[in-house]
Length: 293
Image (cartoon, rainbow, N blue to C red; front, side, top):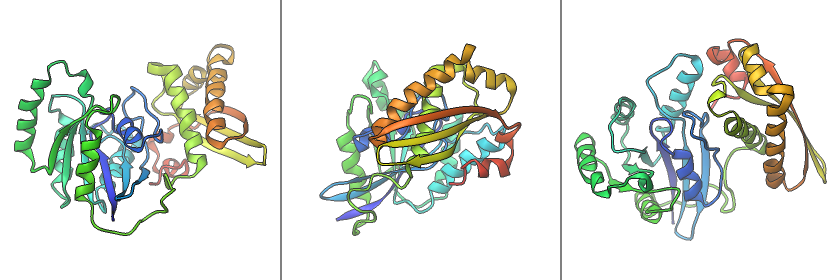
């Protein structure tokens, strides 16, 4: 039996969370086209007859750090590299970018095998173009393996998983075999709400937006939830509420459906939008709002 931790790293918006969901065979991390959708370290556990793979999804590593929140995301991703058994470096294009160079700098300080993955292979028209890029990447670092995949099309995911398992140490199970994650339901409820906001507002979504679960009360038939959507300015509050409250209403309706499916009970959901000026650039406030991975 093998068991161990495999960290998914890379610059923002390369499809790490989508890859995690497809490797697990079910949705755990929220996804969107917006960069830096993932803000926390999220563990997804897959147990087979041969191995227990503990995937660790991380925020995208990026050079731009205008606020304390950006610095926190980078620190969370970098800290994840300590204590894992395998690193899966995800890239989504056939280009080497500045943030990729930053990821490479972080890898120079670790001593575990690294698999380089080109994701979104389905978007590459000329598959032969992968070869020169992979040859260039191979000159930059000694990788355990280089694997092109498509998470959405499930292309080469079996090969990727097989490669990961081969690099894990022999070990008894680390988590119970039926456990999927180490996060509580409250965490995923806040993530569902943030995902719906991202989908509905798209480019209008304020970056400095976060969710706090203020009340979570459950009975045999009903779960009552009150959540605060924190923004930094009154103008952002108006965007999130929308004309005559229409945006907030749609967010609530869509969130309630997903939450009810998750908790398998009727859900009563209250959403409030409040302003906490400068929270995304205040280390203390970031910590109190749940960013303490």
